[in-house]
Image 1: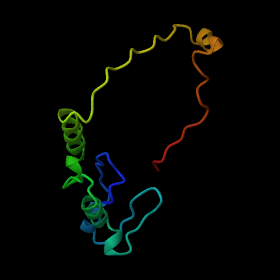
Image 2: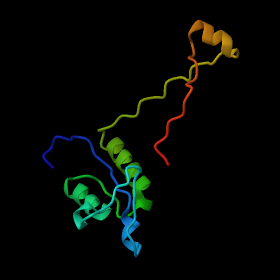
Image 3: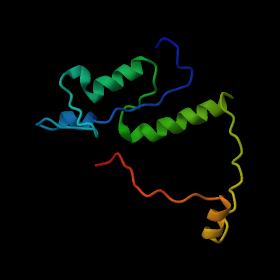
Image 4: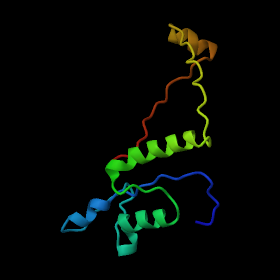
Length: 115
C-alpha cells in the first residue's frame, strides 16, 4: 500500500473453506488456527487485496490470475521474455562426470514441508 513493492503480487491465503465446517479446522504446517475473524483466510485475502495485491475471487482462479498478470506485464512491455538458455549436455557416465566435478554427489536426505 505504501509503494515499497513495485512488482505485482498475486496471492491467495489457503483456508477459505474453513467456514464450511461446523467445527474448528486447522490449516497449515504450523498448526495455525484462526482465533478471530481478522485471522481468517478471507480476512487475510481481503487485506492483501486492499493493499494492492492481485487476489482472485477463489482458489480455482489463482493460476489464471498468475497467467493474466504475466501476459499483462509482457503486453505492456514491463517484462521482456528472455530466450531459454541451452540445456547443458549430461555425460553418459555418471562416475566420470563426478570425477571431473561436473556433477555433485546426490543429497543423502529428503526435506519436505508436507505432513
